[in-house]
Amino acid sequence: MSEVSGGSTNPPGRRAMSRRGLLAGAGAGAVTGAVAGAAGTWGADVASAESGAAAFGPVTIRPGDARYDTLLRGNNFRFAGRPDEIRVVGSTDQVVRAVSDAVRSGRRVAVRSGGHCFENLTADPAVRVLLDLSPMDEVAYDAGRRAFAVQPGATLGQVYRTLFKGWGVTIPAGSCPGVGAGGHFSGGGYGALSRRYGSVVDHLYGVEVVVVGRDGTARAVVATREPDDPNRDLWWAHTGGGGGNFGVVTRYWLRSSGATGTDPAKLLPPSPQRMVQQAIFWSWEHMTERALTGLLRNFGTWHERNSAPGSPHAGLYGILHLSHRAGGTAMLVAQIDADLPKADDMVSEFVSAVTAGVDLTPVLDIRRTVPWLHPMTWPGTGEAGDVLTRRYKIKAGYLRRSFTETQLAAVYRNLTNSAGGPESGMLLIGYGGQVGAVAPGATAIAQRDVIMKAVYQTIWGEKKDDAANLAWVRGFYRDVYAGTGGVPVPGEVNDGSYINYADADLADPRWNTSGVSAHTLYYKDNYPRLQRVKARWDPRNVFTHALAIEPPRAG
Image 1 (cartoon, helix red, strand yellow):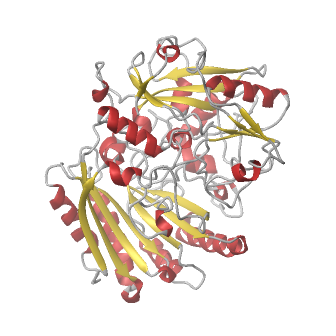
Image 2: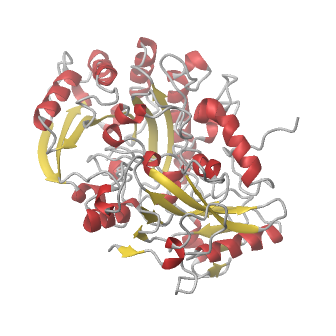
Image 3: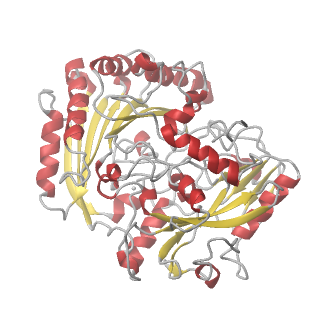
């Protein structure tokens, strides 16, 4: 289950956008013998890696406890449930006991790792037991499995630091260091290195999951991508099927497909040493419709031409961030491994292609070369300075090619209307490249030939402003996708959405009038298979939420 969503990719930018920066901004030890000894035992349930060793917790926190109200909220302050208890757990065994207690007492359970869920999926009022996995944050090398073990409470910053310091390797995950691995990995995971190295789950070797059988018994199971693993379907479901659907993930194992040998430094992609980054800012003061739509069109055209697997430009990652006019700025960000051949030239060519014919003069243009680890882990363990902007709504869509002219007009219309605020806007995020080298059915991520992700967002600080901000971003989204029922129905241009950018509106007929279900928008043709996995591993439908995989209908 882990957290139900958790994806972010953040370039440098304004304070409001550095808050996951919002979306635009990426000590090693040995796993105990209990984990290594489980290697190869596909059919067997596994004991906790911490069995016989000291582990945090469990700690049970109920209403009236001084800690209760603080721990209710995750990253998005719009949502706070009122569970009977918050169970802070530190081992797989503790998760098994907590899930068993919840099932036995008939209480709905939800799980939080990093707390970056975009929707009210872990804070639903129906949730009576909230599992907090944050103490489960180990990142280590498991020699028995020849893979790196990552617990769900580890933040992306922790993962990057440990992999880099210990072995000089990395994964193509998001750029927000505070996001928990639990939700980010299970939903697919992507980031600044995905065009070069694919999605996170393209490097997922195995998972340990606490599941509940038909008899109500909770147990921990290991599932891997090995062809002869009888639990392989459970592994597959966690390669983009999203959290909160099948059980509670208590450990991931990472090893690149095709990696051989026992040298850990050869089992995941090598981390870059330095990154070339360029950020260009323009003022809205001189932004015309022609200029704005030109930027969007050029950004899309570049990605149409340079996003095939193996493209020499696959190492370049770009984001076009357009604030609402009230925010005052538009920004283009590019970054690339400084040690790739002609890295500087590729950045220059990209910037020239995106800005061609737009007749805009930057108010700021910065290019620098920085150590790779620094921007990927700043500010380290938290998101300082964000206490005044902790309410947000995010909507998203995949793009197989550039927006249509009708969609471009809708973007300009909504970024210049009177309803948007200074913290509102949209992003186009570069994708494709090596992501497209994997077949749509090989993992649960069905959208393998897309080239961009579009993100529509609004951020604010006060509850009294909820209605206005929600109305603006919902209206914006519906306008862009007006030709397909207000949502990005898969077709020539659009290709559904990304489950880690969870959006409950897609399951709401008030906002989705397309006749295409949210499940199809997220999973396309992979959804029936995900339902079969659900039926096998969660036959009692213990793990559920507003966008959850539903059991197949009888008959």
